[in-house]
Length: 153
Length: 153
DNA sequence: TGCGATTTAATCGTGTGCGATTTATATTCT
DNA sequence: AGAATATAAATCGCACACGATTAAATCGCA
Image (cartoon, rainbow over all chains, first blue to last red; front, side, top):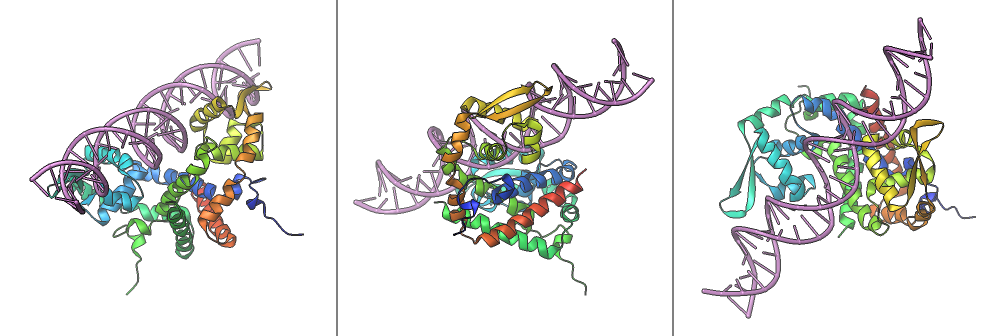
C-alpha cells in the first residue's frame, strides 16, 4: 500500500516534527545566549543586529536598514529612537529627499564596535560545532527564508 | 601566512555572515508565511504552536508546556488566558497539587485540529524544498539550539 | 503647471518574549 | 507540628514584530 507520511496529513504531528519550531526555539536560544554578552554593552539582541548592519555600512536610510534586517519602519523607528537615546546613532532627514531618514553612527557608536568584537567568538564557542557545519546549516536556513519570502506576494 | 577567518575577529562582518541572523530572519519569514493560514482559524503563530503541543498531548501543566515550547509562565500565562477566552482550552488547578495548572482542550479546541490539518502541507509547498533537505536543515538547527542551551547554565 | 499617485517614515494597537519579583502551595527537616 | 526551603504560576515592565493607518514629501503625467 502507498505510504503517506504524516507530514502530509497534518495529523499526529508533534512540535519536534516542525521545521518552523526548530527555528522558533533556536531563535529564542540565540537571544538568550547573546543576552549576557550584550548586557555588558547595553544593547538588546535586535539592537545589536542593527548595529552590525550600521558597522558594515554607515549612513543608511530606514528603508535600506529594513531591507537588510527584513523589518519595516513600524519596528525600526522605535528601535532607532532608543539607539539615538543611547548615543550610538543620530537620525537626520536627507536634505535631498526629506522623506528619507539617514541613520549615522556617532563616535560612541563606532567605538562600540570594538567593545563588541569578542562576541562572535563567544557565540561560536557556545555553539561548539565546526565552522563547516555551521556554514551548511546557515545556507540551508537562508534558503528556507528566501523560499518563504519569494512565495509570499 | 596563517589564515584567520574574519568570524574570529568580530570585525568586518556583515549580517549575512551571522548564523543567528539567518535564524532570526527565517523566524520572521515563517511567522509571515503562517499568518494568512492562521488568520482563517483566528490563531497567532505562537498560539498555533501551543495548540500543536496540546493536540499532541492534552492536559499538560504550564510547566510541561513550557518545557515543550522552551517558554516560561511569564509568556505562557497570558497566551493561555487568550486561548481560554477564544474557547479552545480550559485552565484548572490540579486538585492533587494546587500549585499546578492543568491545561485541557475543549471540544472546540479539538475540532480546531481538523481545520488546521491542511496548514503543514501549505507551508511545505511554500518551502518548495525536498523533505530530505528540510529534515537535514531541521536537525542542524535543533543541534544548534541544544548546544546553546546546554552551554548556558 | 497642477494634481493624483507613489514613496518614506511615523503612529497606533495587539500579542508575544523575558528578566525580575510576588503569591500561593507543597515539601523537608529537625 | 512548625519554620525554612522549594516549586508552580502569575504579575509587572520593557522591547520587539507587525498589520493597518496616517502624514509628509516627491514624482509623473496630462
